[in-house]
Length: 174
Image 1 (spheres, one colour):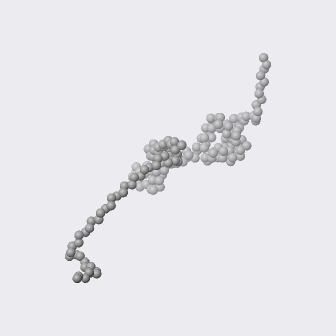
Image 2: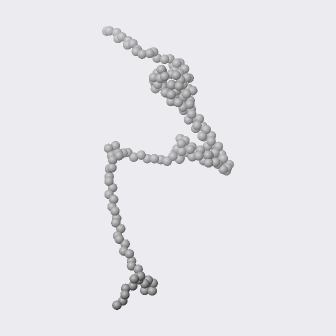
Image 3: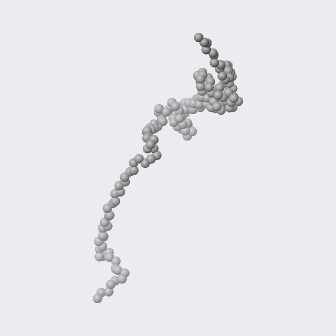
């Protein structure tokens, strides 16, 4: 039997995991500010390694979790600050202090936007399925029946002879 020849790998050799950690350290300052991975790569000067970084992000769960964790930092800080403000406001309410309009706005924002408040405060919206062939077309034309009101007869007022005004041009009597 003939031996199978090994196929030579084409392309650049793979980078070592240590290199990805070095790149991650370079990306970190931009990722913690909420930049997208692409923007962080651009700001870090790693555009020539963009495809390699994207591929490693896609294939390596640990690397992906680190990047996603860094990118979540601004949201976590805002969440922490809002939660602290809400606790302070509820303490004011418990002490029966007057809360400001800004405090009310914070509570309103928190109740509408925060994920833990959504089951309590967010309005439910329903969607209906639409037939794409009928979308944007008039499906049914409504029939409008106009009810014509009956003419109203005006009552003739009876005039008293006493209240009757003399005619401006009286007819001569013969």
